[in-house]
Amino acid sequence: MASFLISDLHLDETRPHITRAFYDFLAGPAAGAEALYILGDFFEVWIGDDDDAPLPQEVARQLKAFSDAGTRLYLMHGNRDFLIGEDYARRCGAELLSDPSLVELAGKPVLLMHGDSLCTLDEEYMAFRQQARNPQWQQALLAKPLEERRQIADQIRAVSKSMNSRKAEDIMDVTPEEVVNALRDHNTRTLIHGHTHRPARHRLEVDGEPAERIVLGDWGELGWCIKADAKGLELIHWPTAS
Image (cartoon, rainbow, N blue to C red; front, side, top):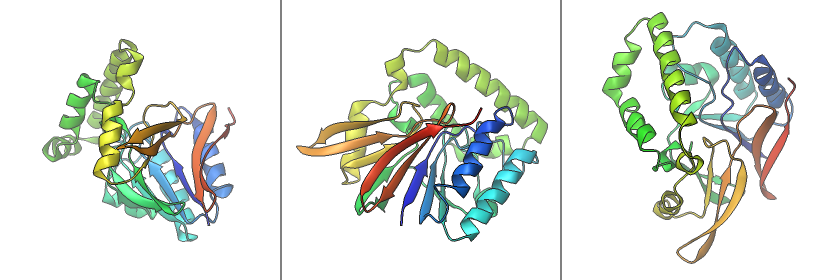
């Protein structure tokens, strides 16, 4: 039985075709899967489990039906939806997955990450990441009224977009040494992550042994997933309906 991995759908009310493509994925290729791993940035923004907007409510219903049918569902935080909590995971029938996590896929240990923690050359982002993952900072944000949180989220997105437009491409990619360190620290030779929106399979070497880093793509004109079964790990893409 196959498992599937996806990342960076950035679900948002302004991109309904991506939401439809995701539902089609659940009903199609992923139907009856052993497990589905969502490796962060599932939503474009997350302001708290108490968000009463229609999109997160409908997504939760779809995922609960999917998991109730027998597929194990795992949610990992990304840099856009790091505030997803246990309450929303429960409503989806999902388990929150720590970043990083070591799991068995295709008969071998595989390290799963969102990928943002590997981009250490982006010092501005890493400083924000450290602040945003602080429990006290999160509690203070979640204590604010919903509408104020929506405004703050819009401001953060605008600042992020402006900052990223001025950064060199290599700064926003993973730091090779961090990839090697992550694989070495977890005693595995396969890493899967998203975040960078640069889908590819990268061969590398760790302590004289062959290793691989597989990068999931974001969902836009194309949908991306990794299929893991007895045949191995396959990076797949297909057009999404616009």
